[in-house]
Image 1 (cartoon, rainbow, N blue to C red):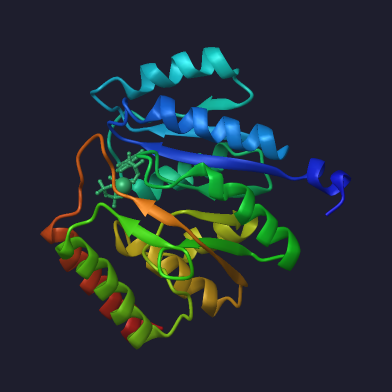
Image 2: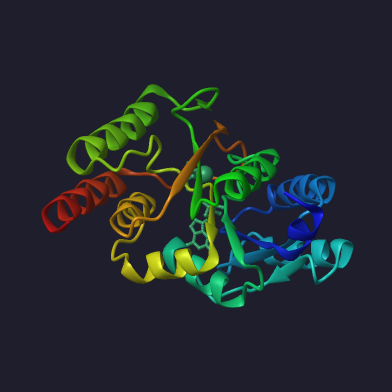
Length: 244
Ligand SMILES: Nc1nc2c(ncn2[C@@H]2O[C@H](COP(=O)(O)OP(=O)(O)OP(=O)(O)O)[C@@H](O)[C@H]2O)c(=O)[nH]1
Ligand SMILES: [Mg+2]
């Protein structure tokens, strides 16, 4: 890629947060470090949903440090869920590419330049991080959590055959218009949402690249995966199986 092309693209990194006050300064520092080093144009959009732990206030401090062109705050009043947080973030994104990642340090920003390079080489519509290829992996999960994730991926592959190794991950790069199209066509919320995005992407014949990532379980803050999420996932999967 020539440097002129490099300077034309802008990557809007969406960071949804709910009670991530310990993680936010670290993840922002890492993103800024990786992006400055790689030289790509970027902005970080923090979508905080009224976290009671002061995440938004931490964001305001970070904005003072890194500047308001790099750190954009687009908070909402209360916890309205991840799906709509992405939609809200896209509305305010000025980049032609969108990167979605978790703020809890499970997704290391060092992979972002790899996502971008893969996209540039193959002109992919989507590049997804995968824990289930090459050097990818999961650290810090107990057996039950591993089984759920593997099981969810296995069942989905079996029923829907999307041909992507990690369907429930949420560390991805999208062309902005592709993401907008996909989000509009997705009906599910919660855990199943990431999987539906890939299934719909295949239906729309979008091209998808994969980059192996090491996924690290959150150290600070609480996990939200419970029994109801599993039931929701199973129902969502069945629905997609029947309707697609
Ligand atoms: N804005 C917003 N962000 C959320 C909401 N729920 C979760 N998040 C954020 O979305 C990202 C992913 O959520 P996680 O709670 O880490 O979900 P997970 O990775 O499946 O589960 P654990 O890491 O085990 O808790 C994190 O950055 C959260 O802070 C929400 O309702 N609104
Ligand atoms: Mg997490």
